[in-house]
Length: 44
Image (tube, rainbow, N blue to C red; front, side, top):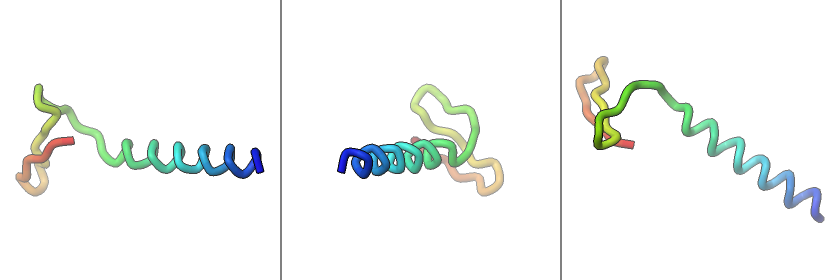
């Protein structure tokens, strides 16, 4: 059972790390930036 809990925690951690690397790009003081391809402005 303990192995299952460790494996589950590792999987959740790995998936959350992947989503944080979705794209690069500098952010301004508000944590936002402009997508130069679409012209959109969004925050993280």
